Each structure stands twice: as C-alpha cells, then as structure tokens.
Image (cartoon, rainbow, N blue to C red; front, top):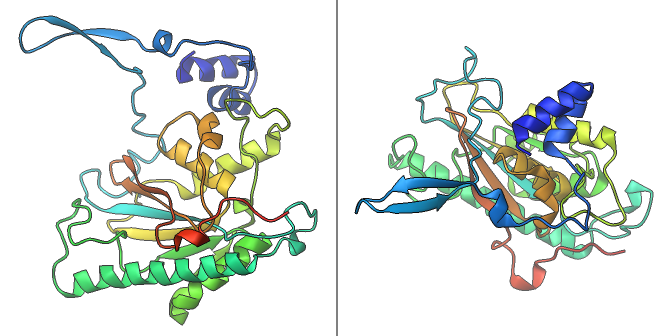
Length: 304
C-alpha cells in the first residue's frame, strides 16, 4: 500500500491522527507475514542507448516537495537561494541506573561525562574552522559543501536545544563548557524533546508498542524543528536529545518509512547532521558519527 493510499484510508476511517498513524506507523503487518522485496519493486521499461530494451527497478515513490508546507510561503527563503539550515542532533552520553523510574537517578557515568566533554571540544573546533575559512575570505559559493573542509554550514550555533531529562541536561552542560559564554546563553530546554518510543517499528518489537501520545509528540517535534530556511541566511542549530527520537526524525526528514527507525544504532554523544536547503531538499551529511571519540570510549548501551 502506498503512503498516499494509507493517508486516504486513514482519513476515511475517521481522523487526521488516524490517517497519519496508518500512513507512517502502520503496524498491521504481522511477524509471520512474508513479502518478496522484488514484488514491491515496479518494473519500468526503458530504452538503452544501444536501442535494446532494458528493465529498471525503482520504488516509484516521489519526493514530496512541500513536506513542511513552506514552499509557497512568503516567510521562507527564496527557492533558488543557496542558503541552508543545518541541524546537528547529538545523543546524550552514557548514563547509569537505566532501569530506575526516577529520572533524577539516571545520571551520566564517568565515561558519559568524558564523552560529552570531548564532543563539545570537537564541535567548537569545527565552528572555529568555519570561522577561519570565513575570515580568510575563502568562503565557497553558496551551495558548495565542504569546499575548505569542515562539518558546519555556519561559524557558530544559532540556537542549542536540549531535552529536559537529566542525562541530556548534563550532556549539554558538559558540551558547552568548550563554548564561550554568549554561546552557552543560547541553550534552551524543550520538554517535548524528551525520550519516547516514537512508533511501532518494523520488524516489530515483541515486548513493546508505541503510545499514541508519544506518536503525536514526536511528530510535533518534527513539525517544530524541521523546515527549510525562513530567512536568506544559513544557520546551524544543535539539538541534544535521545536516540529513539533522533532515529525517527532522520527517517521522517529523508521521507523514509519511519517504522525503520529501530534498524539504526547511534553511539553515545554521536553526531548526526541533516542539511535542509531553501528548496526543501534534505541531505544527511553524517549519521551517528563518533569518530571524534577514542575507540575505547565509543558505546551504545547504558548501565542498568
């Protein structure tokens, strides 16, 4: 069933939220179902340069241009502009007491603290590299990525957003130790960024399912933070949060099936970078990057 048909089916059943749930988080396929991947791939006949027929398999799912409903809005940057918004998504550091029901007890381990500090130093070094390129007058033409090296689109973060959960709060504090005071003052806590089980994954999880409230909340996060530039300027915004939410947001931003989120693994304090162009096109420039950490400090699991 295509995404569009799922939306129409959901709308017919009863509500916008139902339409969304059917479109993006359809968990109707049972674990015993068997689907052939080849049967999902339509075959289009094409003519090769030598005149012979050849078959080309494609998913046949087009990119939705106005996914953020800003394509024709006056507030958005010009469609032909080379300006871009970059979102840096950082998972918190390793934490302990994972099974505790009291969030105040779920604090960073000593290793998690060091992961956060090293991430902050790396990020600030990356911002400084961007500033150096700008000051040397070597700023590449708009739309040209990584001309002089470096990860970032701008020389300082416009905003830094963080979940209100203890491990995220500790992580952002340690990350921004490497930043000057006027940058640290840009940190803003947003409770909607807290960890959630965003939707039922495929393959299904045997012992857990998503709450409807969490599904709505994580969509609110996407709507709030993911959109094309609203002004004729490039910017970098940092979000310090949680693995489940980050993985879901990556799938949504790339217009991939969101129920694939659990197939992705993110190390602690890893960096995920998404770039959104003025035309609404989205690119993933890094996913779960942890190369800034020594190999013996790269972890994915928390301490019970």
